[in-house]
Image 1 (cartoon, rainbow, N blue to C red):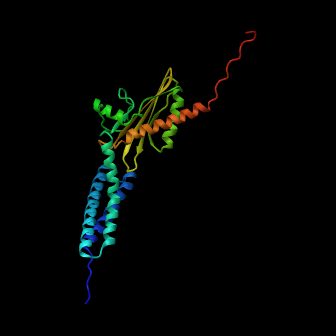
Image 2: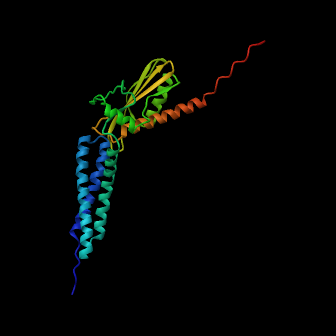
Image 3: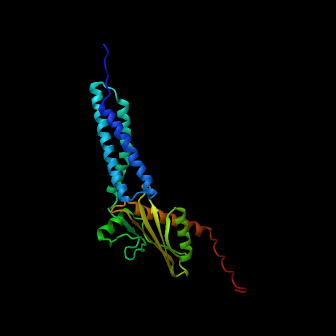
Length: 261
């Protein structure tokens, strides 16, 4: 007598859903980064992909339970479905963790009184005191800098960093004198393809230069901390560049005493 061993339908559908969810989640990321789809379309597709991945996870867990009881075949199919679903849902869990960790803002600046201007057509509003306090707590190093270096030199260093980081330039105004004001506007693209405008203002004064910075999301109401981290990282890199420059500049020799003094 031949015993027929069936393959669990739960396992079959777990693999099918997982195999669908993975490309449905990954391919739109590349399309979004290359601007082949809008952010709205990207969000819709990703929500669908996460729903399919959640279904694959449910089916895989159910398949494991049924396979343990019935002895049917399908362990490998259920495992593949589980693996693909976790590949899709893992980044979602990370994004949710960032959303809980950082304040729900999309516009961060080091100068709330006079933030650097933007050139993109994006709606912004003044920060309420609660938002300002939350930003200052979440990003303690996102502060306006004052350097004992003239504005044109600081502008050149900031422009070099913007180019090195691969940001897309939108507008540049170089300070023509040590006491003039200049600004750099550029667009930075995140890993998932979201775009943020960055504005860096350099103002010359009697002490040297004052650098204020702003980073604003162009896609939504929560930037997952991206703008604040970007400002902190950029200003830290600028601090390092200026420290190296000041270290490499030789000190002026002390004046010799006058003859007969």
